[in-house]
Image (cartoon, rainbow, N blue to C red; front, side, top):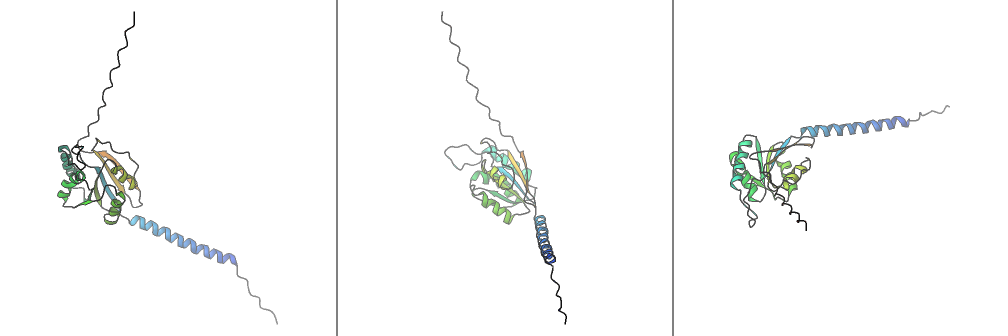
Amino acid sequence: MTDEVVPERRPGLKTALVFLMLFAVLGAVVVLGVISAFSRPVTTLIVIRHAEKVIDPNNADPDLSPAGQVRAQEIVRMFGDAGIKAIYATQWKRTQQTVKPLADRLGLPINQVNSKNTAELLNQIRSQHAGEIVFIAGHNSTVPEIVAALGGPTFPTIPESEYDHLYIVTVYRTGKAKVVKMKYGSLSPVPIPAPSPAPSPAPSPTR
């Protein structure tokens, strides 16, 4: 009576099958990630500082000046037909008055978000306005913060005397952002440095 020989299983084949399954799973994850990325819509944000305000050291919440009201009308002329679907401002009157003519023209509400809560602003835009064109009026310190939080470069704080900065931020499906920085409306006056004091005359030599 002969003993029956049972062939040994080759561990290499089993290991190869495991790796093939892992590669298949990883490949599916990558493909799903790519599909998900390209299914996200492109979002465009137009970000400006509020228009010129009345300079009043005793008023923390001033109205727009006549020059600021003219700039607000310029915004309507430039963006009234741009397809804007949402408008945001802060709790301060100067930002609300800057976008009010545009909101009236488009029949849109002005969404208010606290100027110190950029994270909440972006959360609302991403959850409620993905794939849309959104207009945002902020402040000289918050506008660069918003642009950077969207994935753009870090810009310096806008000088206090300048109101004509405009940033168009395009956030692509992959999450990357492209920023176009430009000027609009009447250019803000360039501050003229005060003249240097004349040097004191040299003392007369003694005789």
